[in-house]
Image (cartoon, rainbow, N blue to C red; front, side):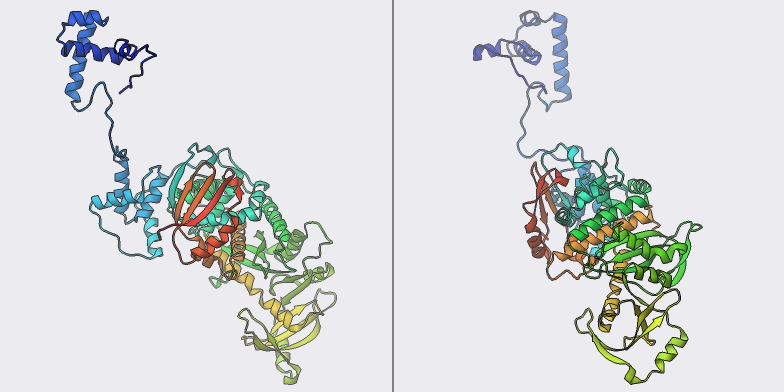
Length: 595
C-alpha cells in the first residue's frame, strides 16, 4: 500500500482538507458517503468526481473488502517482531531436502549461504526440529565428506564474481574451509601476490589474473580429491574469499583456463618465485633432483612408457622432474615436458634455469641425483661448469665381486647422522675411478651396512669433503622423493583423468606453488616445521568458522581445535597488515566459541 506523504501545509487542520494524494481524497470521499450518510451526488460534487466515477470507486472498494477482508485498503498495518525470512517457503524446502540426505546443520548453512539465503544455524536447527528430524549419528570426517560427495540432487552454485563488485558493505557467512584464509598472511609476507600479478598467466574480464591463480591454489591446498565429480567446493564462500571471489568458479572454467596456459608462462612464474626464495635465503648451496611418473588414463598414442614406482610397472605416462632444496623443502623447479630423447639433458636445463643467464652465479654448489638421472658426458659438463655432483654409480657384477673380495681392514667405519638424530654406523671403501665419457677421475665411495644386500657406490667430483658428509648429503636426497610422494597423494598430481581436465605442466606448477606455501607456513610454526603437507593441513588448515566482512575489516573466527592457540599466536603477528587482495581491508583472526 502506498504511504500518504502530503505536500507542505500551513497548519495541522489544513492536512484534512488538502487532497494532494489520490488515496487521501478517495478515503475522505468514501468515509463521507458511508459514515456521514451523505448522498452520492453531493459527495461526488464536493470531492470533484463525476457521478459515474464515484460509483466505480464504491464498487471497487466493496470488491477489495470482499476479496481481502484481512487487508486494510488504505492504511499500512505495522507488524511487530522479526521479519519473516521464508515467505515463499524456498528456504524450508532446501533445508528439508538437504537434511534428508544426512547433511549436518553447518553443512546446510554453508550451502544456504552460497545460495544467498541469510539464515542462522539456529534457524536451520529449529526448522529441522519442527519438521520432526532427529539428530544425526556421530560420524568421522571421512564419512562426512563422503556424504557431501554423494548428494543425489545437484545444487546449482552462484556465478563467480569479484568481491569488489559486491556492493554490500556488510556480509556474514559460515564456511567449512575458513582455515584456508590462514595462508593469506604468508602469501602477503613473501609478496607472492605480486608475483602472481606480474606473471604472464591469462585472465578474463570477469575473473582477474590473481583470482584465477588463487582459485587453483585453493583447490590444491584444500585436499580436494582431484576436483571430484561433486562440485560443492565451488559453493563454499570461504574458499571463494581466499581467491577474492564470492565463490570459486565451476569445473568448466578451470579446464578452459588451463588450455590457455603455455609452458613458457609456467617457466616465467617459477623464475619469479625463485627470486623470492633467494631474497629470503630459502635456497641452500645444494639441490636434490629426481624424476616422477604421472600416469595418464586417456588416449596414450602420444605418450612414452615410463616406470612408475607407485604401481611397480612401466605404463604410458608423462615424465616430470622436480628440484628440491634439502634444507627448506622448497621445490624450486618443475618440468612436465620431458621426453626420452632429452631426459639426460634435463640436469643442464635446470642449471640454466637456476643461473638464469648469469654464468658467474656460484650460489649453487651441489647437485644430487640418482644413477639414471643423467649420463657420464653430462657429469663431465657439470664439472666444467664448477658444479659438484653426488650420485650413485650403477653396480656391475665385476665391481660387486671386487668389493666382496676386499679384506676387512680395507673398510673404514664411520658414524653417519640421520634424520632421527641417532645415526647409523656404516663401513666405506674409497678410491678414484675413471668413467666412460668423463675426462678426469672421480671419487668413488663404496658403502655397506646401510641396510642393502649389495654395496652402494657413491661417486662425486668433490675431493675435499669428508666421506661421512658425502653419505649424509646423498641420504638426504630421499627428501625430494618424500616431496614427490606428497605431491602425488596430497596434491593429487597423478590423477590426470578426471571431471576437470587440467594441463599437466600447469597442474605441476600449481602443485609446486601450493607445496611451497605450505613449507613457508610450517617454517613459522615453531616445533612443526618438519611436518608433512598433509599433517599441516589436518592440524591447522582444515577448519571451519565464521566470516564477517565490513567496510574496512574482515573478521575470521576459527572454530575450536586442539592447535588453534598455536595458529592464532602465529596469525597475531600479522594483525596490523593491510591486504590489497581484499581492497585494503584488515584481516583479524580469532577463536570462535563453538567446535
